[in-house]
Image 1: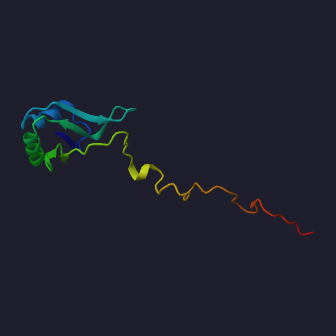
Image 2: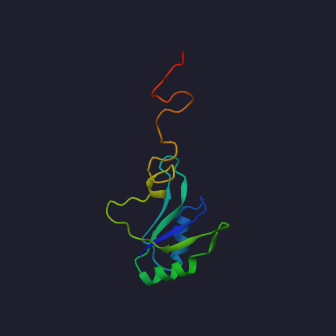
Image 3: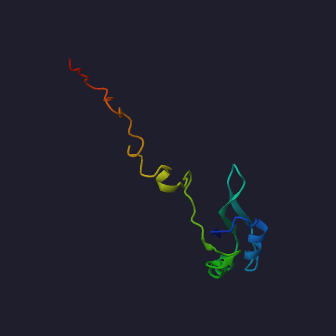
Length: 122
């Protein structure tokens, strides 16, 4: 069973995380997700446990427990569909939903810059 662990303290290492779960049974793999540029932990990871009964016991016991002053979240990881990529806010980092609002408005702007019909009074 693949297990998601969230709200991890940034200084927790994979070996330490693996140790928490080994108390409940065999751990096939452990991975803390890191930022690809800085290498710093993103505060979440995954544990793979081959025995589902042991995995469920670990989830039950460790969810809501405290690690280095932080309450961690532990639950069964949801499988991603092929090609699916998770992004926050619908994939638009500016907020909203790409409907042309906000600062993406384009067009004239400013005093006397309408771009339209300019008439001079003479």
